Length: 113
Length: 113
Image (cartoon, rainbow over all chains, first blue to last red; front, side, top):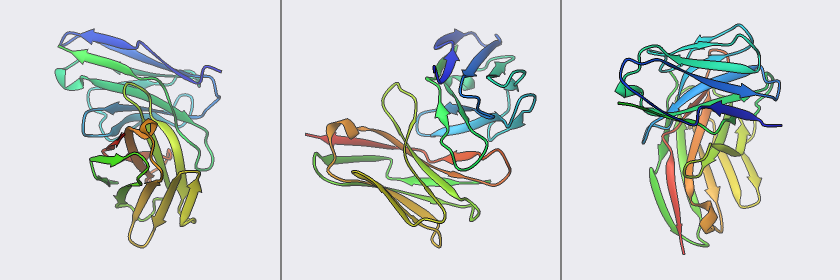
């Protein structure tokens, strides 16, 4: 099993450009999450999904959109990138029931110039 | 919304000493409290977790305690080793569906030889 994977690993954008980050998991998890990590601020939830075809806003959703067309994939889109979106982005997934662990992907380092 | 405060932000100990990291949470309905370890440039990984119906849990050199009345929980690492050096994050679930986690801002632990 590959677990949770993310593409790309690194990306540099110019202000106003758009891009999509892909998260994929092969553990048949229902729940998937997108976080951003900034120095001194921990991990903050952007959007999440509780199943295929569903999405919901997290703590810091502005400037981002998501889609969950397939159960194994969760896409994070930036329509018009801003320097404030420079961050490390982590995807995570987990099973539905109980208090199960969230499994994290390796992260995507995004720089917006 | 849910708030998780974590202290200290940095902690330096001598090899073999104990380290304690403390967190407080705001949502009295929180019922799951994981701790993640993140090495430099790596993804967060679960090291221990505790449910609200348990006061203490131990796994070798790592233990977590929970005081529901005071709404705080702590991570204890005994006999610290250089490989324990990393950033540690506490987290708590909060109500609203999706089993979402709110993370603390992290503690940079340095174990010195």
